[in-house]
Image (cartoon, rainbow, N blue to C red; front, side, top):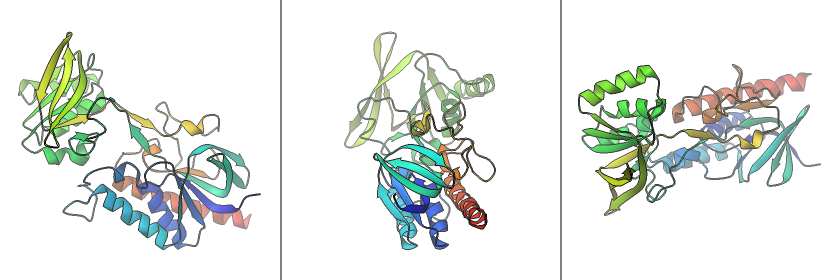
Length: 311
Protein backbone atom coordinates (compact mmCIF):
# COMPACT_ATOMS: atom_id res chain seq x y z
CA UNK A 1 0.00 0.00 0.00
CA UNK A 2 1.32 3.41 -0.91
CA UNK A 3 1.49 6.34 1.50
CA UNK A 4 -1.83 8.10 2.01
CA UNK A 5 -1.54 11.87 1.70
CA UNK A 6 -4.06 14.32 3.05
CA UNK A 7 -4.38 16.01 -0.32
CA UNK A 8 -3.23 15.33 -3.85
CA UNK A 9 -3.46 18.35 -6.15
CA UNK A 10 -3.49 17.67 -9.87
CA UNK A 11 -1.80 20.56 -11.64
CA UNK A 12 0.58 23.22 -10.33
CA UNK A 13 -0.79 26.43 -11.82
CA UNK A 14 -1.74 29.53 -9.82
CA UNK A 15 -4.95 27.98 -8.48
CA UNK A 16 -3.29 24.83 -7.11
CA UNK A 17 -0.27 26.73 -5.79
CA UNK A 18 -2.53 29.17 -3.93
CA UNK A 19 -4.54 26.25 -2.52
CA UNK A 20 -1.32 24.58 -1.40
CA UNK A 21 -0.28 27.70 0.51
CA UNK A 22 -3.51 27.49 2.48
CA UNK A 23 -3.48 23.75 3.13
CA UNK A 24 0.16 23.46 4.10
CA UNK A 25 -0.03 26.44 6.48
CA UNK A 26 -2.53 24.35 8.42
CA UNK A 27 -0.28 21.26 8.38
CA UNK A 28 -2.40 19.46 5.80
CA UNK A 29 0.00 17.10 4.01
CA UNK A 30 -0.08 18.23 0.36
CA UNK A 31 1.55 17.07 -2.86
CA UNK A 32 1.07 18.58 -6.32
CA UNK A 33 1.61 16.72 -9.59
CA UNK A 34 2.30 18.77 -12.72
CA UNK A 35 2.77 17.29 -16.19
CA UNK A 36 3.96 20.46 -17.89
CA UNK A 37 5.21 23.78 -16.56
CA UNK A 38 4.87 24.83 -12.93
CA UNK A 39 2.70 27.94 -13.05
CA UNK A 40 0.64 26.73 -16.02
CA UNK A 41 -0.36 29.23 -18.70
CA UNK A 42 0.62 32.08 -16.39
CA UNK A 43 4.24 30.92 -16.41
CA UNK A 44 4.47 31.11 -20.20
CA UNK A 45 2.83 34.53 -20.41
CA UNK A 46 5.39 37.21 -21.15
CA UNK A 47 3.89 39.88 -18.88
CA UNK A 48 0.94 39.75 -16.49
CA UNK A 49 -0.37 43.29 -16.32
CA UNK A 50 -3.64 42.85 -14.44
CA UNK A 51 -2.68 40.86 -11.33
CA UNK A 52 -3.40 42.91 -8.17
CA UNK A 53 -0.42 44.19 -6.24
CA UNK A 54 1.94 44.71 -9.17
CA UNK A 55 1.31 48.22 -10.56
CA UNK A 56 4.11 47.86 -13.11
CA UNK A 57 3.03 44.35 -14.09
CA UNK A 58 5.03 41.18 -13.48
CA UNK A 59 6.57 38.61 -15.78
CA UNK A 60 4.51 35.44 -15.85
CA UNK A 61 7.48 33.22 -15.04
CA UNK A 62 8.39 35.45 -12.08
CA UNK A 63 4.87 35.32 -10.67
CA UNK A 64 4.76 31.54 -11.08
CA UNK A 65 8.14 31.20 -9.39
CA UNK A 66 7.06 33.29 -6.42
CA UNK A 67 3.88 31.26 -5.99
CA UNK A 68 5.92 28.06 -6.16
CA UNK A 69 8.41 29.26 -3.52
CA UNK A 70 5.61 30.37 -1.22
CA UNK A 71 3.87 26.99 -1.40
CA UNK A 72 7.13 25.13 -0.83
CA UNK A 73 8.01 27.41 2.08
CA UNK A 74 5.07 25.99 4.01
CA UNK A 75 5.85 22.39 3.09
CA UNK A 76 4.06 21.67 -0.17
CA UNK A 77 5.72 18.96 -2.26
CA UNK A 78 5.71 19.65 -6.00
CA UNK A 79 6.51 16.77 -8.32
CA UNK A 80 6.28 16.15 -12.04
CA UNK A 81 3.95 13.47 -13.30
CA UNK A 82 0.95 12.94 -15.55
CA UNK A 83 -2.33 11.80 -14.06
CA UNK A 84 -4.24 9.31 -16.18
CA UNK A 85 -7.19 8.46 -13.92
CA UNK A 86 -8.82 8.92 -10.55
CA UNK A 87 -11.23 6.69 -8.65
CA UNK A 88 -13.17 6.81 -5.41
CA UNK A 89 -12.51 4.20 -2.72
CA UNK A 90 -14.58 5.79 0.01
CA UNK A 91 -12.32 7.49 2.52
CA UNK A 92 -9.45 7.33 0.05
CA UNK A 93 -9.12 8.57 -3.51
CA UNK A 94 -6.75 6.77 -5.86
CA UNK A 95 -4.91 8.91 -8.40
CA UNK A 96 -2.81 7.14 -11.04
CA UNK A 97 0.36 9.14 -11.71
CA UNK A 98 2.67 7.89 -14.46
CA UNK A 99 1.11 4.46 -14.04
CA UNK A 100 1.59 4.36 -10.27
CA UNK A 101 -1.32 4.52 -7.83
CA UNK A 102 -1.15 7.37 -5.31
CA UNK A 103 -3.63 7.69 -2.47
CA UNK A 104 -5.08 10.68 -0.67
CA UNK A 105 -8.01 11.57 1.55
CA UNK A 106 -8.96 14.45 -0.73
CA UNK A 107 -8.08 15.62 -4.23
CA UNK A 108 -8.02 19.03 -5.91
CA UNK A 109 -8.20 19.10 -9.70
CA UNK A 110 -6.66 22.33 -11.00
CA UNK A 111 -5.41 21.26 -14.41
CA UNK A 112 -6.56 24.39 -16.21
CA UNK A 113 -7.33 24.71 -19.89
CA UNK A 114 -5.17 24.89 -22.98
CA UNK A 115 -5.74 27.35 -25.81
CA UNK A 116 -6.69 25.77 -29.09
CA UNK A 117 -3.88 26.45 -31.53
CA UNK A 118 -3.77 27.16 -35.25
CA UNK A 119 -0.50 25.19 -35.50
CA UNK A 120 0.96 27.54 -38.09
CA UNK A 121 4.56 28.74 -38.54
CA UNK A 122 5.55 31.40 -35.99
CA UNK A 123 2.71 30.67 -33.54
CA UNK A 124 4.56 28.64 -30.92
CA UNK A 125 7.86 30.48 -31.35
CA UNK A 126 6.37 33.91 -30.66
CA UNK A 127 3.82 33.07 -27.98
CA UNK A 128 3.69 36.04 -25.60
CA UNK A 129 5.93 38.05 -27.94
CA UNK A 130 3.45 39.06 -30.58
CA UNK A 131 1.17 36.01 -30.47
CA UNK A 132 -1.54 36.10 -27.81
CA UNK A 133 -4.65 34.28 -26.64
CA UNK A 134 -6.00 36.77 -24.10
CA UNK A 135 -7.00 40.34 -24.96
CA UNK A 136 -7.67 41.42 -21.38
CA UNK A 137 -4.23 40.15 -20.41
CA UNK A 138 -2.18 41.58 -23.26
CA UNK A 139 -4.30 44.09 -25.16
CA UNK A 140 -2.73 47.11 -23.47
CA UNK A 141 0.60 46.29 -25.10
CA UNK A 142 -0.95 47.26 -28.46
CA UNK A 143 -1.93 50.81 -27.79
CA UNK A 144 -1.90 52.73 -31.09
CA UNK A 145 -0.90 49.62 -33.02
CA UNK A 146 -2.47 47.28 -35.59
CA UNK A 147 -3.38 43.67 -34.85
CA UNK A 148 -5.03 40.66 -36.41
CA UNK A 149 -7.72 38.79 -34.50
CA UNK A 150 -8.50 35.22 -35.57
CA UNK A 151 -11.88 33.61 -34.93
CA UNK A 152 -15.58 34.05 -35.54
CA UNK A 153 -17.21 32.87 -32.33
CA UNK A 154 -18.45 34.84 -29.33
CA UNK A 155 -15.06 35.06 -27.65
CA UNK A 156 -13.31 36.28 -30.82
CA UNK A 157 -15.88 39.04 -31.37
CA UNK A 158 -15.89 40.08 -27.72
CA UNK A 159 -12.11 40.21 -27.59
CA UNK A 160 -11.86 42.11 -30.88
CA UNK A 161 -14.29 44.73 -29.59
CA UNK A 162 -12.31 44.94 -26.35
CA UNK A 163 -9.08 45.49 -28.28
CA UNK A 164 -10.51 48.53 -30.09
CA UNK A 165 -9.91 50.57 -26.95
CA UNK A 166 -6.17 50.23 -27.61
CA UNK A 167 -5.53 49.56 -31.28
CA UNK A 168 -5.69 51.79 -34.31
CA UNK A 169 -7.03 49.01 -36.53
CA UNK A 170 -8.04 45.35 -36.32
CA UNK A 171 -8.27 42.84 -39.15
CA UNK A 172 -10.64 40.06 -38.10
CA UNK A 173 -9.87 36.82 -39.96
CA UNK A 174 -12.75 34.35 -40.01
CA UNK A 175 -12.17 30.95 -41.59
CA UNK A 176 -15.78 30.54 -42.70
CA UNK A 177 -18.60 32.69 -41.32
CA UNK A 178 -19.18 34.53 -38.07
CA UNK A 179 -20.92 32.25 -35.58
CA UNK A 180 -21.23 34.74 -32.73
CA UNK A 181 -24.62 35.67 -31.28
CA UNK A 182 -26.81 38.17 -33.13
CA UNK A 183 -26.31 40.73 -30.37
CA UNK A 184 -22.53 40.55 -30.70
CA UNK A 185 -22.71 40.70 -34.48
CA UNK A 186 -24.80 43.86 -34.26
CA UNK A 187 -22.26 45.40 -31.89
CA UNK A 188 -19.41 44.34 -34.16
CA UNK A 189 -21.06 46.12 -37.09
CA UNK A 190 -20.78 49.45 -35.25
CA UNK A 191 -16.99 49.10 -35.14
CA UNK A 192 -16.90 47.98 -38.75
CA UNK A 193 -18.87 51.08 -39.76
CA UNK A 194 -16.42 53.25 -37.81
CA UNK A 195 -13.49 51.66 -39.64
CA UNK A 196 -11.96 50.23 -36.46
CA UNK A 197 -12.44 46.61 -37.49
CA UNK A 198 -12.28 45.07 -40.97
CA UNK A 199 -13.89 41.63 -41.29
CA UNK A 200 -12.40 39.09 -43.70
CA UNK A 201 -14.73 36.12 -44.13
CA UNK A 202 -13.58 32.87 -45.71
CA UNK A 203 -10.00 33.71 -44.82
CA UNK A 204 -7.52 31.22 -43.42
CA UNK A 205 -4.56 32.18 -41.24
CA UNK A 206 -1.49 30.45 -42.64
CA UNK A 207 1.69 32.03 -41.30
CA UNK A 208 2.99 34.56 -38.77
CA UNK A 209 5.91 36.49 -40.24
CA UNK A 210 8.60 38.06 -38.08
CA UNK A 211 11.47 40.45 -38.62
CA UNK A 212 14.11 41.51 -36.07
CA UNK A 213 12.47 39.20 -33.52
CA UNK A 214 9.08 40.95 -33.87
CA UNK A 215 5.80 40.00 -35.49
CA UNK A 216 5.39 42.13 -38.60
CA UNK A 217 2.90 40.34 -40.86
CA UNK A 218 0.21 37.69 -40.95
CA UNK A 219 -0.33 35.74 -44.16
CA UNK A 220 -3.55 34.01 -45.08
CA UNK A 221 -5.56 32.74 -48.00
CA UNK A 222 -8.84 34.12 -49.36
CA UNK A 223 -10.59 32.77 -52.45
CA UNK A 224 -7.51 30.73 -53.26
CA UNK A 225 -5.19 33.74 -53.26
CA UNK A 226 -2.61 34.75 -50.69
CA UNK A 227 -3.47 37.80 -48.60
CA UNK A 228 -1.10 39.66 -46.30
CA UNK A 229 -1.65 41.96 -43.31
CA UNK A 230 0.93 44.33 -41.84
CA UNK A 231 0.50 44.10 -38.07
CA UNK A 232 2.27 44.37 -34.73
CA UNK A 233 0.62 41.33 -33.17
CA UNK A 234 -1.98 38.59 -33.51
CA UNK A 235 -4.68 37.47 -31.08
CA UNK A 236 -6.04 33.97 -31.61
CA UNK A 237 -9.48 33.03 -30.25
CA UNK A 238 -10.44 29.65 -31.62
CA UNK A 239 -11.53 28.14 -28.33
CA UNK A 240 -10.17 26.56 -25.17
CA UNK A 241 -9.74 22.89 -24.49
CA UNK A 242 -10.06 21.98 -20.79
CA UNK A 243 -7.49 19.52 -19.51
CA UNK A 244 -10.07 16.97 -18.37
CA UNK A 245 -9.48 14.05 -20.72
CA UNK A 246 -8.18 11.92 -17.84
CA UNK A 247 -11.58 12.14 -16.16
CA UNK A 248 -13.34 10.03 -18.80
CA UNK A 249 -15.17 7.20 -17.10
CA UNK A 250 -14.60 8.48 -13.57
CA UNK A 251 -18.16 9.65 -12.95
CA UNK A 252 -17.04 13.22 -12.31
CA UNK A 253 -19.60 15.34 -14.12
CA UNK A 254 -18.51 17.78 -16.83
CA UNK A 255 -20.47 20.46 -18.66
CA UNK A 256 -20.97 20.57 -22.42
CA UNK A 257 -17.56 22.21 -22.86
CA UNK A 258 -15.76 19.55 -20.86
CA UNK A 259 -15.30 21.76 -17.79
CA UNK A 260 -15.81 20.29 -14.33
CA UNK A 261 -19.09 20.96 -12.57
CA UNK A 262 -18.85 21.87 -8.87
CA UNK A 263 -21.09 22.97 -6.05
CA UNK A 264 -20.71 26.15 -3.99
CA UNK A 265 -17.86 24.57 -2.03
CA UNK A 266 -16.11 23.70 -5.31
CA UNK A 267 -16.67 19.99 -4.68
CA UNK A 268 -17.25 17.81 -7.74
CA UNK A 269 -19.79 15.01 -8.08
CA UNK A 270 -17.18 12.67 -6.57
CA UNK A 271 -17.12 13.14 -2.81
CA UNK A 272 -13.82 14.51 -1.57
CA UNK A 273 -12.69 15.65 -5.00
CA UNK A 274 -12.67 19.39 -5.61
CA UNK A 275 -11.90 21.59 -8.64
CA UNK A 276 -10.72 25.17 -9.01
CA UNK A 277 -9.38 27.58 -11.60
CA UNK A 278 -9.75 27.49 -15.37
CA UNK A 279 -10.78 23.83 -15.45
CA UNK A 280 -13.94 24.54 -13.47
CA UNK A 281 -17.29 25.24 -15.12
CA UNK A 282 -18.11 28.91 -14.60
CA UNK A 283 -14.48 30.04 -14.20
CA UNK A 284 -13.56 33.50 -15.49
CA UNK A 285 -10.19 32.38 -16.95
CA UNK A 286 -8.25 35.03 -15.01
CA UNK A 287 -5.24 34.42 -12.78
CA UNK A 288 -6.62 36.50 -9.92
CA UNK A 289 -9.89 34.58 -9.78
CA UNK A 290 -8.06 31.24 -10.14
CA UNK A 291 -5.97 32.11 -7.09
CA UNK A 292 -9.12 33.07 -5.18
CA UNK A 293 -10.78 29.79 -6.12
CA UNK A 294 -7.69 27.93 -4.94
CA UNK A 295 -8.05 29.53 -1.52
CA UNK A 296 -11.76 28.67 -1.43
CA UNK A 297 -11.08 25.07 -2.43
CA UNK A 298 -8.41 24.75 0.26
CA UNK A 299 -10.82 25.91 2.95
CA UNK A 300 -13.45 23.47 1.67
CA UNK A 301 -10.88 20.66 1.71
CA UNK A 302 -9.98 21.52 5.30
CA UNK A 303 -13.64 21.37 6.26
CA UNK A 304 -14.08 18.06 4.44
CA UNK A 305 -11.07 16.46 6.14
CA UNK A 306 -12.18 17.72 9.54
CA UNK A 307 -15.65 16.26 9.13
CA UNK A 308 -14.18 12.93 7.98
CA UNK A 309 -11.87 12.83 11.02
CA UNK A 310 -14.83 13.36 13.35
CA UNK A 311 -16.95 10.67 11.72
